[in-house]
Length: 279
Image 1 (tube, helix red, strand yellow):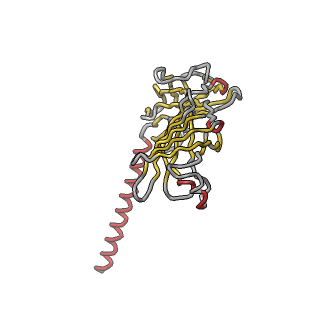
Image 2 (image 1 turned 90 degrees about the vertical axis):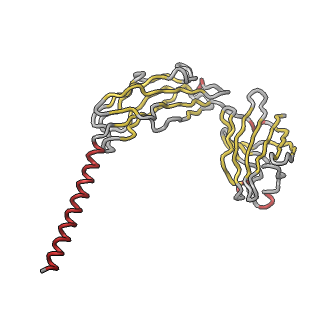
Image 3 (image 1 turned 135 degrees about the vertical axis):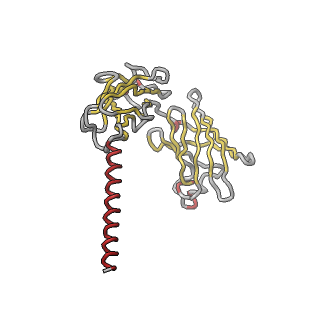
């Protein structure tokens, strides 16, 4: 009889514990469903790139429900008021872009999780030398239980700079920062795609050293957008575990290139400063 009482007591405790867990879960769900919708931009720094005139194209900027409530769509229409940040914007309305539809207002419809700011993008009016930008700020939201998040600003970058680095040869000077060791070459630059390139050599290694050992190439890959060079982290020669990464710039007046990049080594990383003088 004593054993039966103990078993019944254990079952009672288990049921009580289960009941508490369910109550806690329900309370959490209730708490979540009562939080306000958080409105903002999920993508805060998109780039719109066109390198030839193909006329007007649609540009769409999403205003999102980032959090709040039960994770579903809006329970009723949410009206979002936005404006152009004139201080930060460098693009011109009527040149790179125009607003399509009602300017300054968009709606997140009932049942949806985002609304759209519609733009007409004029691909023939992008600046060929520098990128420009349109900055929009959410100013107010209205609807049932809504707030503005910290992600209330979006910057649209209009890029029309088409680089032509592969059209030239260069007098190349590479200096190893640690000891000043210098290499001078005459090299070209390989075009891999739009604004995407590859050098002929890396660091102070001569052309053919990597490919002679089985690597697919001797240089490194980089991209250039309106004069700004990015050397993404990559395997040396597309083959070795050593990593290469860095940055640089193209002088828009002379076409000369400067880059500073790191090559990792087990004995210590090395920084190389390279100058490409266009011939």
